[in-house]
Amino acid sequence: MDIVIIFIILLIVALVFKKPSNVIIFFGLIDIFLRILDYIGKNTIKEVNEFINKVFPDSIPAIISAHSDGTLELICMWGYVLLMILFVYYVFRMLLHRL
Image (tube, rainbow, N blue to C red; front, side, top):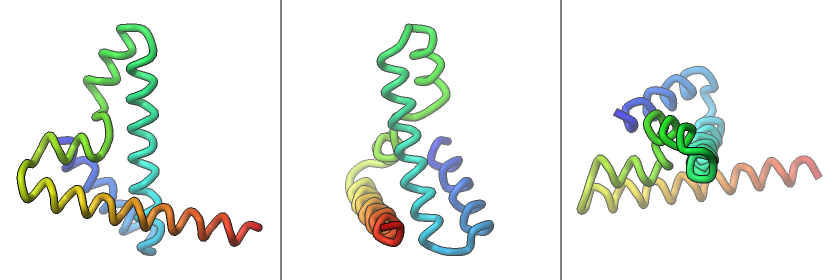
């Protein structure tokens, strides 16, 4: 279910923003947000930890690993790595434009 929600959100973002760079940046921001929530959940009180672990997945690679295995998981993880490389590229490019 997690992976379907992420793809629906990305589809909505793709329809709204229309630029591939914005979709890739949003994808990276989703992953960063999930990792921050995971850290908060693991380093706070038990009730917060249970709520965050119940509602939010750890990260996008955790979603991929939970819903696939074998060759499909390998292909999806390399796709994830490619998207994160593009995310770093676009963020770095935005940083250079601001200097």
